[in-house]
Image (tube, rainbow, N blue to C red; front, side):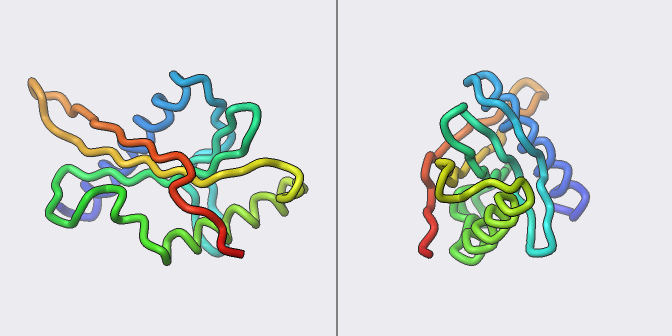
Length: 129
């Protein structure tokens, strides 16, 4: 898969995840939240918690499942970005419930249309600090 095609698939998967969360009643706070240390695909809330979401989309298992791509290194990066988000928004990380979810999207073609299979893992990883 070429770089542009991979990027387009990733953007498509993130939009699928946005729609998935909206259908479940979540509010989207941020999409592609970027800092100097990295990016978080989505930040959503269910009115009780701030949820940091990493989305991985694949159309082949050649490189493993989508969720397997969220490595410990990526998890540490997401935790750093989440901390920066709390600082920027002047929120206390201790006062507001938060969690880290993962969404894996496996894409197949069905009748000339992309069909997503969504796996949502709540509390996919936690801060070790």
